[in-house]
Length: 256
Image 1 (cartoon, rainbow, N blue to C red):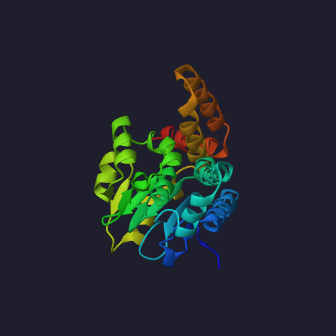
Image 2 (image 1 turned 45 degrees about the vertical axis):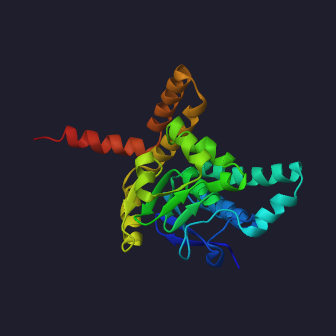
């Protein structure tokens, strides 16, 4: 049975983590299935957004017990390869050209919180809870740190990764980890309302914006400006921009 279920909804795909009996805990199979589903969605030129969500009562509870047992007995080289596998999933989300949105209900803990943090946007129910509790068992929320540090202040990131407490959706919103909080009762309806903007704006402009936004992370100021100039010029050459400009100019110069 597939651990990720893909459902198509016109302009977006929903990728549902499907291990409800394990609270959608991460294992090798789920990670592989999610990578495959993301890759396939990225090749679909009709899609404008991707949602990642969980089946059952939780979004994702982190690594499952079998994965933790494997960690406990593996060599350094084996653990290095295993950690790289999860890192590849998180970085793939940034490489996918269109927005990837985490729709979080229930708990998103440890690797589950990391998965949500790695997404471009996060929408959460009022009762959702988050946390990076790895330090409680002598572990480190290491891979997510690169993403977390880019989302919150240094001191907040330090607090979250070294204290390991759970926090509410409202706190996550205040920290800068959640974009929008919605009601539990209207979760599906409000997810659609939130992402429907991507059906109305330019797909190529959104893709160029995403690429530029993350590209500037590793650039100094002058290089970031140069990257912006290049992205601007690329945008001008797209069909979306040419058509948009033509419509705009036609409205501006319409005879009164």
